[in-house]
Length: 371
Image (cartoon, rainbow, N blue to C red; front, side):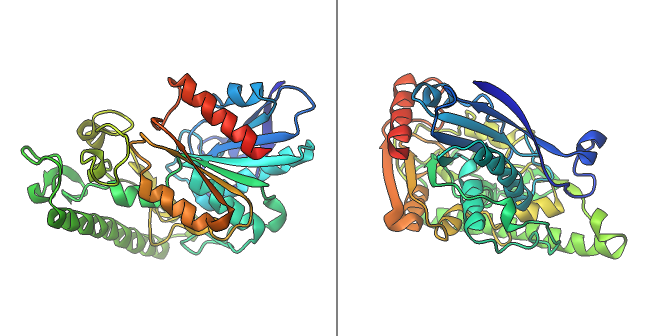
């Protein structure tokens, strides 16, 4: 069985989509793949913005007797206006539909950036506390919108989009409108600067990352106040660009948060990825920045959310991952406490498309653990 499913969702913010059809009748699009009508376990795969409809886990899990439900939020392929609070509402609509089909066990898989979304969702499904977005705008979340999963599997999951940006934002940028104006003392890609990095330099670097992201956050808050003074709050928002967001020293210094990874980012050569026109948090609006990219404001800090849940948790560490590091895996495990089971997938990079033996190992693990 392979079904394409449209799930109605609640309307979002003003001009959230340029499509009048989507605004008037908003839907998310899901895919259900199952070995037949007798499958008792369903795995749910979701990401805030990535399209998981062709995820590499689909066939292996279905061949082992499980159903797989692939959920795309309304922000699929475009996180410019993404609100994490609205994304969990979308996931809730999908979970409600899946529950109506009668599956006895639902396991929510938080893969990569889906980890923080899954943890935030489960936290709020068990006890709803959110009544608005971080900018103080009310949101129509209701307890009946959010049906909890029976278990969480966090597969090479990073702790959250805001935490990723904090660790990767380039502190050498001196002018947000001109990324070529750079502080050579804080440029990890400067000619002649090679790992291993001096601990004192690294401490200055990390502090400067916090300062740059803090300046952006302060500007966002101030700009929102300006806009709200000049027009209706529902339209008070603005798009902007954040340049150079792939500059985590761990990408080049393999002694930091050491695992089995190779140098570089998951996209390839780190310096080229940092300078690319597209990338982490590149395009966003003021309000979406606060919800997904601001460590001060985003509610989607995965480990913090996970600590407020009650279900069993599987944490899978890809030991050759270039973007999820051992300290982050440890943070997930600390949050899970006695509910957590850790599994190290030896030699696994972030993606398993080209690693059939490791993909088999992971699929066997997920199905056996779920049972």
